[in-house]
Amino acid sequence: MISCIVLAAGHSSRFGSPKALARIDDQQTVLEYLQKKLVQTHLDEVCVVLGAQHEQVKSFLLNHKKVKSVYNKDHNFGQTSSFKTGLQHINPQAEGVLLLPVDCPCVTVATIDKLIDAFQKDNVDILIPTYKNRKGHPPLFSARLKQNFLDLDHSMGINGIAHRKDVAVNLVPFEDEGVVQTFNTPEEFLALRELLA
Image (cartoon, rainbow, N blue to C red; front, side, top):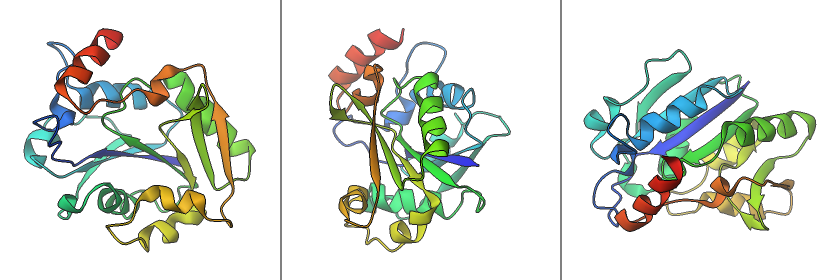
């Protein structure tokens, strides 16, 4: 079983409003677009972590058996806090956890499925997709690391675990530029939206 944690809890201060609510087009928000993509993959569940403006963001959750949500009351502490909240609410049978920030909507279904396939073949702790030697999203973590992540202080970054000598990390190259495409400002989102249209 492979679970996905979607980080959609941030205030998005540089963006000016929650990124999850940014509109791809008249029909859908970034969060809706991302969920529609994720439920087409080999993922077994998608856990969306909510925080800032959670009631409004929650109204854009997909009504699908794979999708659920959890509210992170400590979302002001950042992504590590939200990831830990997600870890505590995914299926305990999950063997791997895909981590996808909501501002990475361009990654393809095929890329996610290839990552899952690679994870199930290789006995590694972390898989990180790359594009032209640039590390991107979404990383896929073995459930063996779950307690290591839960033990992290909110001020510590998630990436620190990947630099430990006892953690096996594989980089997986992709032709999908979506693994490195994110947005932090309205201008960056407008450029990204052109690619998604």
